[in-house]
Amino acid sequence: MRKARGMMFAIISALIFGFTPIMVRETLSNGSNVIMTSFLRGFFVIPFLAISLKSRNISLKVTKQELKKLILMCSIGGCITMTMLYASYQYISVGLATSIHFIFPTIVTVYSVMFLNEKMTKYKFVSLIASIIGVILLANNVGGSNNFPLGMFLAVASGCTYSFYLIYMDVSGLKNMDSVKVTFYNCTINSTMLFIFGLITGDFTLSLSRYAWIIAFVISILVSVFGTLFIQLSIVNAGVSTYTIFSTLEPITSVILGIILFNETTDPRRLLGCFMIFMSVMILAVSMRFQERKAKGMVNNE
Image (cartoon, rainbow, N blue to C red; front, top):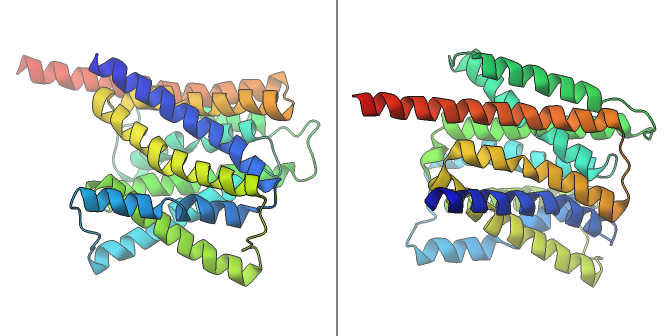
């Protein structure tokens, strides 16, 4: 029953994150821009996160060293990732952008093998090859706009910077900090940086339609509160590998909704590219599940 709940939470979180790109495009077409949308996503939720921390008697205080680490991780892995991914929606379909962004599990795996002395198993190797093939297939610009390469670059780059977020979270020790506290600082740092950048570039604007304001608020609450919460509940109840498997529903959701709501077109080659990236994540997840069961078996034998 506990594992079933974990699977349900994983599915809900994937659907939330898969639906988010659709709402982002709605704000962009109703008076907002990439910087403003990214700013509002973090800004709206800050009070709710602060209340949550206070209700659990968790202090907001951090050491100078922790603050430096948070600024580095959140600025590159949070702020830049979000901005580039949202910007890519303006040049390529949301389904394609989300699928390409999902190369981050493979990037994390490659880094772990090269620099953290993890073993390159056959599962990891096959996953890497599948991910590379997927990106190559998706890079085909048949019928695409002149800005297609820019959209591809932004989506790939967002996957790389998000990989940095995950890796740095692990190696810096910030993974031991309360997850809501990390989210609070992530939203605060991102909003501050985007506010300053928006003022400098002139992208900070309050001239959004009422509909755009509502959607921006919904994005903030869904992603930063419910999406994050369901991820944590999924991992606690079913484990990381189970969450990773069901997280592949995120790009699938974006692809399907993009076709239904925005009449986004695709072709067999791009569908195959999306499938290869999905498979690369699935292979990694199966590998993780196998290692978990093997470790449990060794413990039981002892």
